[in-house]
Length: 108
Image (cartoon, rainbow, N blue to C red; front, side, top):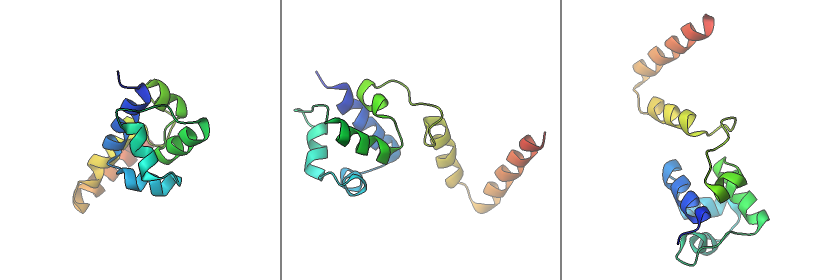
């Protein structure tokens, strides 16, 4: 049976479009070690390693270990990330239109 950590880490990497090599460079953890957490022999890393991974991904250690929903207060929560991703796909004219609509909502 796959560990929840393994499943959550893989899902988060896929969701954010981050490669193991990139995560390794952001955390100082070797790509081989990270691949080990994603492999069939997956285990939960030591607390300091889990913390580095969680911090680099903008999630909590609790989320990585339990798979429970991310804290909505985090800057990269799923809904915010999806909106930003969609926004970035728009051309400049549509981005301006979206910004204008947001400004209207914020005004009142």
